[in-house]
Image (cartoon, rainbow, N blue to C red; front, side):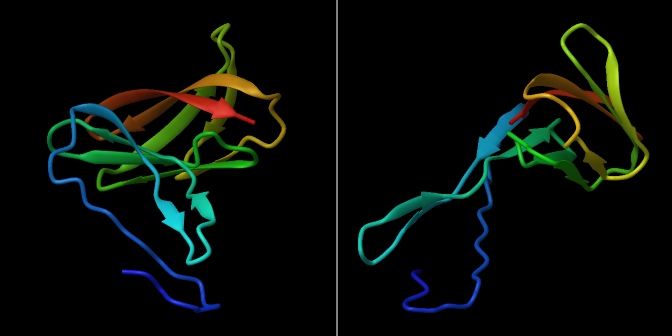
Length: 121
């Protein structure tokens, strides 16, 4: 339901009860009372049938974050030539120094390696 004329930040959520295996992308469309439309950032969620990995934002500018119900051991980001650009042992990675373009994120978990294309603005 709409928040009305509130100036307080609001949180919204959505549960996809039938996600597809692999990558699923989501965003929320907000329509104000005056008809103005805005969209949330896109959230990429990888689902392997049992566990999920959420990568956000994508596209990203300065920082890339990963949320998962699995243990994240490390992350590596590669450019399209295969050169490793970023290594992180936590759930966030600083990518502000990278030029705009497409990158491949590898997420190392307890269940294996997940790969996802990342768009850098």
